[in-house]
Length: 456
Image 1 (cartoon, rainbow, N blue to C red):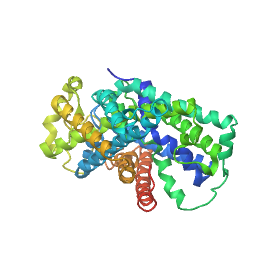
Image 2: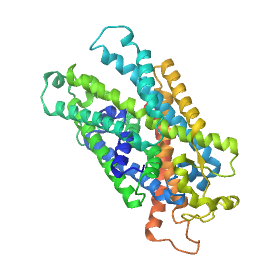
Image 3: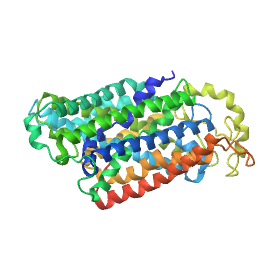
Image 4: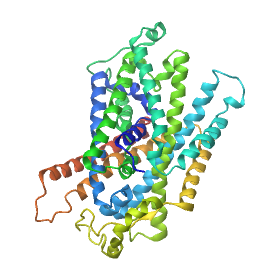
């Protein structure tokens, strides 16, 4: 069953708005209110540009089968498996961090209601959540089937937004006592803290790893429809970040911390807020498992079948739609022989399909769950490792790869002697600028992580 624009918006918004939304007010501290708002808007535009380019270049592969791997094989085939490995590690690491947050957060919530030792054990809660909630959701094959859980998660984010707005608007003596100085027009102090907070803004909208799956599952895959989906999702995410970030910063000023909810007085509303955070991270795990599983499948196929032909992941339910493309197999030997070879929509120079079904689907999903569980039970903090992975993997997914895809593929169907339309020439320039921006972000984020111990 194909999904609607509404379903795509919910999934994309849930992927973008993770637990990191709680750190958004803290990101305003070194930037000040106006510059912080400008950063939210600018980074939202950069991320939406990457999403739009993903949508635009998806026409260069058979409809419904776009992925980072297949598009990489059309542009930089020698790096396709490297980028897929980065995507797999990044999504796997973020998923593990969610389980770590569950192990830290749920015992705190339960301590409000009970003193039983086993109910306050992080190992118990990680095990229970993994078995009862996470595992069944991860074995769902299509992102569209997760739209109901994503709706619950978005409701949780909405509650956090209401909580922040309420405490900003309603006077409270305990909160007033904690309020510090609020910088309006300029940063209170220009120092290294701006660099350490920079990744919070940049990676706030990271949802690009699920964009191709959302495009593939849309009933209407036209560019206008996908663009509408992106516009709605990013606008909603931007509104949430502005509300929580700006109002949270105005509430506590330069006394803000990395997790705003810890500053609110203990109350029923604050406890519900912590429960909302727990729901948010628990239900976000399957959205990391989905692209990680696809990337692992690409890597396994790459090494088991060789790198002659670039595969695409599909399910048995989708195979019937590929019968009309059976003539592609006769042209496999012609694919990617020349880097400058023209690539046309529905041309013969498009890759064959490899399925992700049966034992392989079960094996990869089970492996991701097992290793995530073992790692989450063994460690309590993955901050530095995840920051490095995020600085490389998230940057590649959000900016560098969409930029490379756009620059290499857009207008590639025209002969070299033909001048492409103005729109496509502009898009190629934008693609190049986005890729350059991605490398700048990567260098900046890695520097902040290594030297300032910043996290994303």
